[in-house]
Amino acid sequence: MSLAAMAAMMAGLSRTAWAQEPGKVARTLRSLRIWWETVTREPDAGDEEAKDNERFVSPARPDPHAWSDGGITVAWIGHSTFLINLEGTTILTDPVFSEKIGISLLGLSTVGLRRFVPPALTIPALPPLDLILLSHAHMDHYDIPSLRRLPRGVPVILARDNTEFLDGLGFTRTQELDWGQTAEVAGVRIEAVPAKHWGRRYPWDRDRGYNGLLLTKHKRSILFGGDTAYTERLPAAMHGRPLDVAVLPIGGYNPYIANHASPEQAWDLWRELRARYLVPMHWRTFRMSHERPFEPYERLASAGNGSARRIALHAIGETWRLPG
Image 1 (cartoon, rainbow, N blue to C red):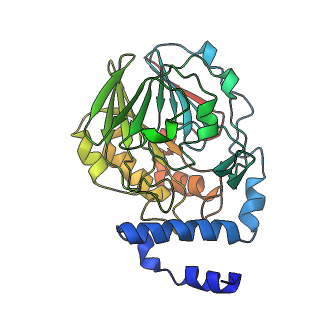
Image 2: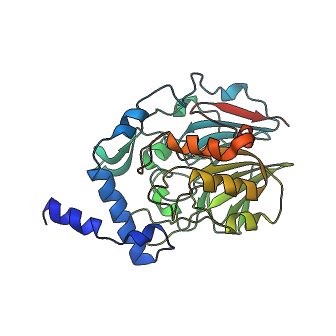
């Protein structure tokens, strides 16, 4: 098949798949279309915008060895990777430290997306970890080369049917959670809560779990949203429980609004969750969709109006603390 014919075929896939809950066939077609649009997209002004290495990038690096063990401290490493100290427990979310994410070709190269901003911390600079969270199996959240470099004895919490990708890496303490299930690690209660996304790692893969993760210790609580579109199921799963921080995705919505919340929808979710602070994620690091790289934060700040001070982190490498 010629490139022109393939382009016509991909263009003909139903655009309604972005705006409704897809079935298995639609999910496969959607995954193929995302891949095709990524590899064939022409460079544009957004690519140039993302090369600005100073905007939304902190000049200072996190210093986790100086952090207090009381309250909550959060540092944005990049994309959906955060280093969190929750009342003395050190947690790493969706660790992605690679320069590129995607499919490895015999370990020689990676076909996929290149990050615009390096991670704010290198793996050797991380403090001792108590817990690793993997929200779902997509490669921008579940990066095998990064995981291969992390300590094997750290407990890992994963979504349903996600452990097999760790096979051969040597991790000895893994546990899968489905929605409503809980675990406890290092004094932190972890509860899997609903998201609106999908869990296949490859277009031809079977359906797998995908989670938001509610973390509580003592009187402090953090929701790590993973990847999600707007869904009423997420606030409903909180059952009115107090929440200090909601970490929610704000990028990747154009045209994939069925699976990635827009900035305005993320703001609405934060309000419905009744969290004290919002930490935006899933933007700035990779170009995964058609919106400009800086558009998600600009729209989020506008949605917040006078409450924008409740946005807790604004730049890669920034550290934020809520005292105990």
